[in-house]
Structure formats: C-alpha cells, structure tokens
Amino acid sequence: MKIRESLRYVLFLARRNFLASLGVVGLVAGIVFSFTFGNPPANPPNHLSLPPSAPFDQNISGLGLVEANTENISIGSFTSGIVSQVFVKAGDRVQKGDPLFTLDQRSTQAEISLQEREIDVAQTEILETTVDLAEKKEDLRRGEALQVGREISQSELKKRQFAVARAQAQLEHRIKKCEQAKAKLSLTKIDFEKLTVRAPITGTILKVRIHSGEFISDLSSSSQALILMGNIHPLHLRVQVDENDAWRFDSDTKAYAYLKSNKEIHFPLSFVRLDPYAQPKQQLSGDSAERVDTRVLEIIYKIEGNSKNIYIGQQFDVFIEVNKTNRF
Image (cartoon, rainbow, N blue to C red; front, top):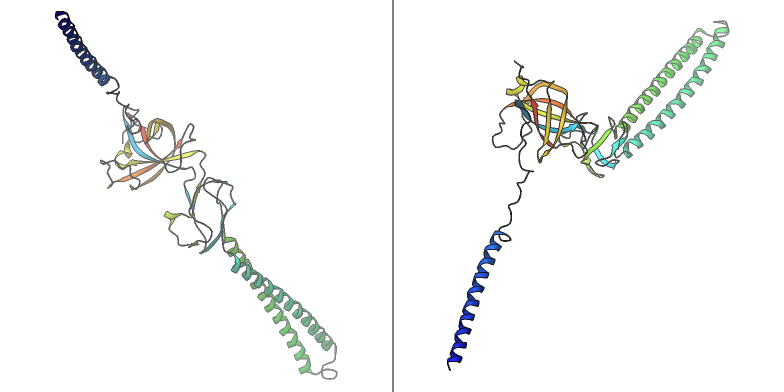
C-alpha cells in the first residue's frame, strides 16, 4: 500500500515538473521568436524619395528640363486636310528632307493634270497664231511690193498692215496667257509639295500625335504639335533659375544635375548659353514651398557623360556653384 502511494506521488511530481518545464520552454521560445522572426529588421530607407544634397558650399538651385540640342521642334502643317499617310513613329531617326506625313493629294493632282492640259492648249494656240502671223506678214510683203493706186489700193494695204498688227498682238496675248498658265501650274505644284511635310533637320522623332484619316488644321495650337522632333545627341538641359538668384550666376562655375527619382544618378553639366530674358515661371517642381509668382532666367547646359537612360522631358534638380568673389 505504501509502495503504491509512493509511486503515485512520484508520477504526480514527474507530471507536474513536465508541465512546468514545458511552460518554461514555451516561454523561452516565445521570447526568442519575438526578438528574431517576430521582429524583422526595419527596411532600409527609400533612397528614391530622398532629395539630393547640394555638392557646393554656396550654390544656386534650379529645376532642369531635358530637351534636344536643337530645342524641341513642333512640326505643323502648311494647310488643312485629311492625313493620308504617316511615314514615321516615335524613336525613328530621320534625315533632313525625309517625309514625315502627307495629306490627301487627289484634288491637287487632278488640278495639276487640268492645268497641264490648259498649257498644251495654250501652246497649240500660240503655234496657230504664229502661222497666221507669218501668213499675214507675207500678204503684207506682197502688197508693199505692188504699186499703190495701180496694183493695190491704199485701203487694202492698210487692211493688211492692220491684220499683221492684230495677229502680232494676238500672239503676244496668247504667249502671256501660256506663261500665266505655267506660273499657275508652278504655284499648284508648290501647294502639292506642301501636302507632304518633311523633316526640317536631321534628328529623332520624339512624339507622333497624328494618324491616317485624321483631319488636321493649319491653325493647330503649337502646344499640341502634330510631330515633335529634335537632335538628341547630345542632350541639353534647360535650367530655370529664380530671378532673385540671377545676379549670383557665373557661367564659368561647375554645375551638376541630379535625377529627381534617384539622387545617386547625377551628371556634370557644361554651359552652352543663356537666354537673356526673364520670363514667368512655367515648369513647376511640385514643392509646397515653391514660388509661382516669380520670373525665371533660363540657362541651357549640355549633359556630359553617358546619357543613355535620360529622356526628353525628364526633370532634374540642378545645383550651380556660386563664385564667392562674384559681386553684382
């Protein structure tokens, strides 16, 4: 009996200690999990959203917009009409004089054919009048060889003289009429050439906003260019500098452009020119502290280095070094 009770007591203690040990193990496992898997390390800061810091002690900052070195050329149309064919697409490289698009040419072609036939008729009339003039001149020559009053009357001789003068005037009139028809044909051919819009420079097509079958007008707004193109080798950066900082600018100092979405991507800049006209600010950066009731000076730089992944229209944060000895 005592042995049986002793065994029960031993089993009770073992069960109790097992539950206590299991509880301790679970507690330890929970603490370990909380400090390892349950508490992962914080993600690194998003460098794409961090603004770049100025590389100079004193600098002028501005917003830069990437553009072609020929500036972005807005292609329009000489005349209104229906687009019959578009020869280019965005990204194409074209040479000066290459066709970009053409308008419907059928009515102009028909007009050219009609005017060419009119010229043929006018030239035939000139030939007929020339023969008639030669005939009347021969009649006059024979009349002048006769003795007036005996072999030919004075009135008959005058009549032949008037006939020659009339034929001569008619020939001159028809020659001028033919020349006028030729000039009209030349003008129509110019209008025909205008129906095909060609590249004004050698460059790259940046944007195409037209399609075959669309109606376009010669009064289209320049802000909605039919085709946008320019020379992108090398790229230029148009930088807007606040008019209050214009006096601090020095074209001989260094300048850097930082991509707005990644401060690690930056490029040195080379000064090209300055537009000597302060204009109202149009390109906005979106900064809440940005002033919009100001005027800006536009400075054009060339982007140095590998600009393979830079595209027309991208924005850059630009920092221009200030010459400490510069005084207004």
